[in-house]
Amino acid sequence: MTLSFFRKSILQFILTSISIVLIGSLPYLFFNMKSQLDVLMMIERNELNNTLFLHDTIVFNIQEYGMHMWSTLKLITSGGMVEYYQNGKYYPLFPELFELFTKSMVYLVLGLVIGLVVAVVSTILIMSISGKVRALPKMILFVLESLPDIFIILIFQLLIIWVYQKTGLLVFNITSTFEGEPVLLPVLVLSLLPGIYVTKYLLLAFEYEEEQPYVKLALSKGLSKWRILFIHMFRNSVLTLFNHFKSIFTFALANLLMLEIIFDIDGFMTFLYKNSVLNPEVLTISLFLVFIPFFIGFTILKWGLERKFWRGEGTLD
Image (tube, rainbow, N blue to C red; front, side, top):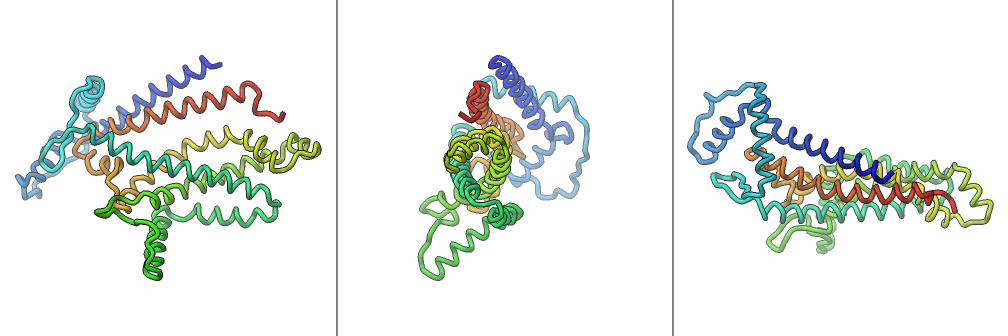
């Protein structure tokens, strides 16, 4: 079973890696990227003022597409110096990209951890009340889930400004200043929506487990409801949570770009947003930088969880 699991994981890794290379070089398939990049660089260097005569059409250039994929793979595997173009000059990609990546991932991981902890506690508290009373927190979750992400971020910022105007107390930094970048508020905002989604999925899993015979058997044996919730129902809901958590991680990663822009944070996602147009290979390298560590982490965690369940530890003792 373990051998089959790792074979499947290796196949997923290979297929995803191929997809990243294909996606990263995709502009070369449909556009004449070499001439476009030359023109953009000339504009940035003020060598070209009139661009009205320029035009471009969608093409289907398999040769350029394949050549760029091959050059990107050579660049990644050779371990040589990687540079990116910005404002008329070339700069080394590393270690700058590593530093920005580390900073942004701290925001992301802290946000996900806080969201996960709050979601687990909230779910257990909601499950501890009667079924009729649960309708209110479910409705609140539905309303929060339906709100746009940017609306929630702006509400947080406006609320802090309002408190500061009324009391003179600045609870959190809402944007970057000379003193540094905001940390706590972006983390809390980033944790909110993943926490809502995790709570929703956990509630569905808990309510499903609540109808299972082992819960009624445990109650008839005199086990407390809290013990059943914490030990048995939560343990049997872990795999369901994990299967949804990967999509929640992707959702939080997408929100990270919007968060960095609104809070004026010089991070990994904004670097990618600003520089991947003129440097398509930066997109491929950055995707690998995100994919590899988190794929390894999710694979190890999934292997541990499924191994525990294969041994029958997911049933009621």
